Length: 133
Picture 1 (spheres, helix red, strand yellow):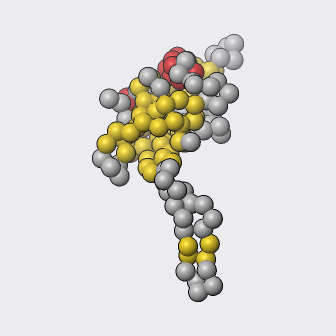
Picture 2: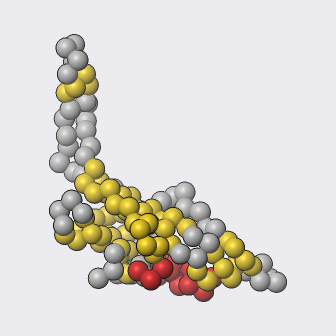
Picture 3: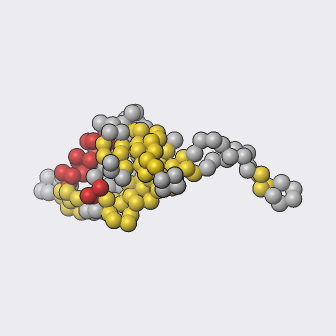
């Protein structure tokens, strides 16, 4: 099992930078939290939690990146949302979990080299973030 699975695509561990995987598991959500007149915060936690997974990839070739993107796109539930059911290791529970995530809308491709036609042939390190609905 890979550290992160997007749909049925296992993100290649060999391309993930060592020490650059960050998981924010089970982030609690509140509704109508407030501080009362005695200064005590009243928080009403919702049962649904959200997780966020981000990691940095090592420099890679254009061919490697195109392979990753083709695999991710083929696993989108909805192309416009760039979403999929993703599996990740939840450090809080010590288990693998699956949730409905979207690929961060502000992702940046970091090109390092292009060929004579302007097609990228090398990419620098990039940070990939996936956020649970």
